[in-house]
Image (cartoon, rainbow, N blue to C red; front, side):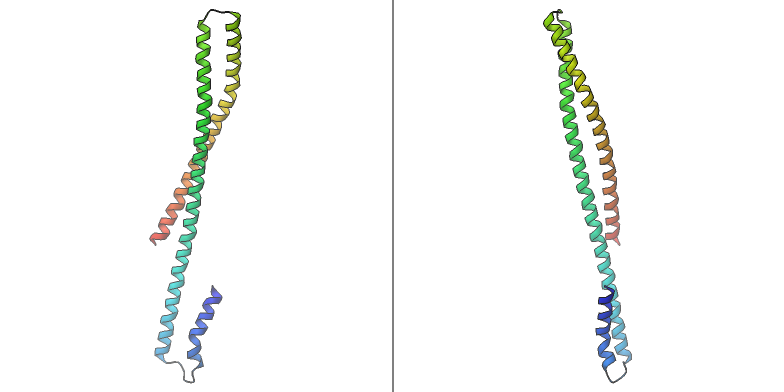
Amino acid sequence: MKRYLSALVLLLALPVLAADDPPTHADLVELNKTLKEIARLIEQQTKVQKADVLLKRATFATAQQSTAQERVNQIARERNTVDAQRADLEARLVSLQRETATDETVTRLTTIKTRLQTIQSPLAAMQQELSTAQNDLEVLRREARDWKALLDKAIAN
C-alpha cells in the first residue's frame, strides 16, 4: 500500500517536476488538494476493510453459536429420550411391585431394576454434557454479541 501511494505521488508530481518552469503556487495547491483526497480515500478504504473483517468475525461467531445451539438441542433430545425410557421403566416397576409376588414377577422386577441402573449412568453423563454444552453456548453468545458491538461501533464511526 505504501509503495502504491509513493508511486501515485510520484506520478502526480512528475508533470510539475518535469516542467522547465518551477511549480507555481496554483500547481502546489492542486497537488496538495489531490494528496489530501488520496489520504482521505485511503483512510476510508481502511475503515471499510476493518468493518469487513469485523463483519466476517461476527458472522463466524454467529455460525459457531448456531452450531453450539444445535448441539445443545441434540443432547437435550437424546437426554429426554433416555429420561422417558427411565420414567417408563419406573412406572412398570411400581406397577409390578403392586402385583402379587410370583417367580415371573420377581424376574421381571430384577430385569427392570437392572435396566434402570444401566440407564442412570448414561443419563447422568448426558446431563453433564448438556450443562457443558449450555455453558459453551453462553460463552459463544457473549462472543458473538461482543463482535457485533465492535462492528456496530466501526460502522457508526
